[in-house]
Length: 197
Ligand SMILES: [Ca+2]
Ligand SMILES: [Ca+2]
Image (cartoon, rainbow, N blue to C red):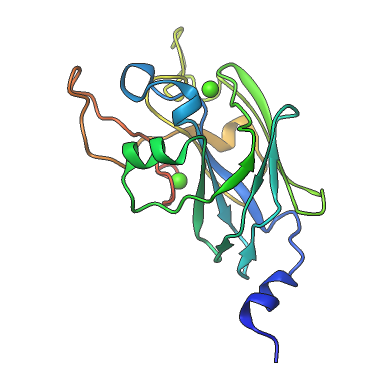
């Protein structure tokens, strides 16, 4: 009789099973520090069966990071953090973070194309974002997601990655405040349902 874990490993992951659901591409400098420590990517299993993420790869065409063993249940989310220790310090220990190997694929603060590959090299999801996404009408400065605290969240997880299907988060995970400014820190909804869904 096959064990549960073997059954999971036999499931071929295909496009439509898992998506990039949220990104923190430009952490709020004054409160969260530098990008290399506080960038993160959230993945969500939008299919009907548990997925084994081992061997999946994320890249923007430069560096490659390979996900390690992790079983993601349907409609659950997991965070790929640039630096797991920094992420935990900022957001607490209650959020699922997946270990990875390789080199962090830096999320550009202007525009970038993130690709999520299956363990056999198939593109599972592609997100070509820009810092103009979520820029409020008439706002000549920056999007809330562009270094102003918010993450960039997908609105409908089953639809395509167009600009109108992504928006800056309106919620945050950590209720703490920055001791210098009093502003909330740790914005976005890593590991949880998006505030704009
Ligand atoms: Ca960045
Ligand atoms: Ca989220």
